[in-house]
Amino acid sequence: MATQEYWADSPMDRRQTPLGRWFPTLDAMIAPNDPVRLLDEVLQAVDWKDWEEKYRRQKGQPPIHPRHIAAAILYGMYRGIRSSRKLEEACNYRFDFIWLVEGRHIDHTTFAKFRTRFHQPLKELFKQIGRLAMALGLIRLGEVGFDATRVKANNSRFATRTAKTLEEKLQALDELFEHLSSQLNAADAEDLGTGEKTGLPDELAAVEQRRQRVQEALEQARAADEVRRRQGIDPHKNPAQVPTTDPDSHVMPNKEGGYAPNYTPLATTDGERGFIVDCDVLAEVNEGPAALPSVDRIEETFGERPKRFLTDAGNNSGQIMAGMEERGVEFYAPVESAQPQAGNPALRDDPREPVPPTAWADLPRNPQGQLDKSCFVYDPSHDQYYCPQGQAMPYDHTNRVTRGGETVRKRVYRSSACTGCPLASACLSPQSKRGRTITRDQYAEVRERTAARMAKDESRTIYRQRPRIAETPFGILKSVMGLRQFLLRGLEKVKTEWLWAVTAFNVVKLAREIGKLRAEFAETLATA
Image (cartoon, rainbow, N blue to C red; front, side, top):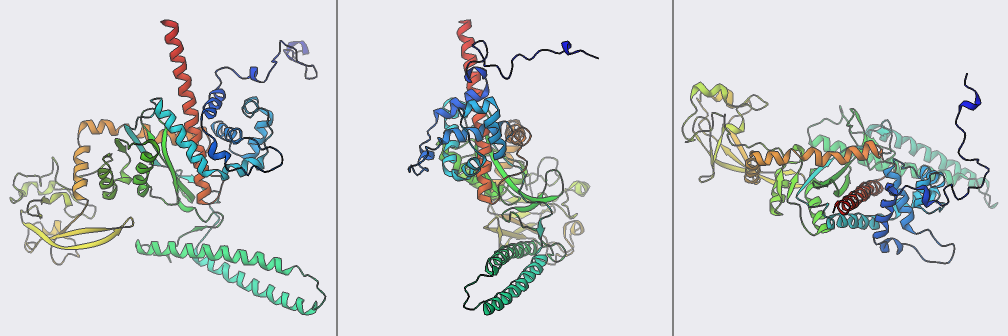
C-alpha cells in the first residue's frame, strides 16, 4: 500500500495568504487566449443603450449593468449552463464566471427575471452581432440554409388531454364550484353580522382559475379536432391531444420517435462561416410558412437579401417558390417536374402522336397505380394537355382550394376521348366517370423553372452544401449547449429563450473568428 509520502503535496495551504509568486490577481488566473476574454471584448463593443433604458433609474441600490448579466447568460449557454440556479452557483465558484462578472454576486431570481424581460433589446443585440460579423467579411449572404428542428416543451409527454377528458374535468370542476358555493352561502348565513371570514372565497377563486384553464384547453382541443376533421381524420377514433402545462405547445412527432408536446425552432444560417442570420419558433409542425418572412427579416437586419436560399423538400411549395422569385432570390430545394423528363416514353417531339404500345409498360405510375401526371404534356401555346394517346385535353373549369392560408386556383383539364381507349384501365381511377383530368395551379410555371434549375450539375453542387450549412447549428445547440428542452413556458417566452441560445451561438462564433484573425495577423507580421 502506498505511503503518505507517495502522493504529491498540495501546492498551496488553504489557510496561507497567497504571496506574489502565486496568482496575485483574478485576471492572472484567466489565460490570455481564453474564450471568455474575447466574448467579453465582443460584448463591450456593442451598444447597450436599449437595455439601459429599461431601468427606472430611481433611488436605491445601484443596479448591475445589463451587460454583465447578459454576458453571464450567454457564456453560460456556451458552457451548457442554462439553469438560473446553476448560473448563480457558477458566478460564485467558477473563476471564468467570476472574472466575467467582475466578482458581482448575481442571484438566480435576477437571472430568471432578466432573461424574459429584455426580448426586444436582445433582438437588437442579435442584429448588432450579425452586422459586426458582416463588416468583418464573416457573413456574405451568398447561400443561406433554412431548416427547423424539434425541441421539447416544458410539459410532460403524459400531461395531455383530449376534448372528451377535458369536458369530464370541466364538469367535475363545475360540480365542485357549486358545492363550495353552497357551503359559502351556508357559512355566510351562520356568520351574518359577525364579520368573520370562512376562507372559502379563496378556495372558490382557485377553482374558478382551474375552470378557466380547462375551458381554454377544451377550446383548443375542439379546434384541433376540427382541423383533423377537415384533414380527413376521424377525431372520435383519433382525437387531438392538448398539453395542459404549456398549452401553447403542440403534440408533435419527436426526432427520437414517438409524440410529445414540442415546439419547432427554426434558423436560417449563412454559408460563409455558419453564422445564424435569422431565427424564430413555431408552435406547429410545418416550418414552410416561415421561409419568406425569414428572408424579409434578413433584409431588414443586413440591408440586403440572400442570393441563394437552400431548404429541404418539405418547404418546396409553389407559394414559397413564387415568393422567392419575386424577391430575386434563387430557390434551391428538391423539385420534380410535372412534365415528362428524359427516360419517360411520354417525352416525344410531337405530343399529338401516341406513345408506342411497346413503351406503355415504362410509363410512370402514381401511388394509386394510375398513369402519373408526368405522362401528360402541357402545350402553353394552346393552354391544353396531351395524353399518352395524343388526345387533346382542353381547359374545363377552375377549382379554388385553401392551401397554407392562401386561396389557390387550380385549372382542370379534361379528356373527352377516354371511352374505348386501350390505356383507360391504367389511366382512369374507378371514380372517374367523365374522363381523365389533370390540374394545373398558378404556381406550375415557377415550379417548372425551379425544377429545370435543380436539374443542372452546378445547382446540385450548390445544394449539396445544405446539410452542412443548415443542420450544423442545431447539432451544436443541442449537443454542445444542451438545448433539448425549453425551460420556459408559453410561445413568447420560448421565442426569447431560443433567441438567447442563437445569440450565444453567434457571439461565441464571432469571438473565435476574431481570435483566428488576430492569430493569422500575428503570424503574418512574424514572417514578414
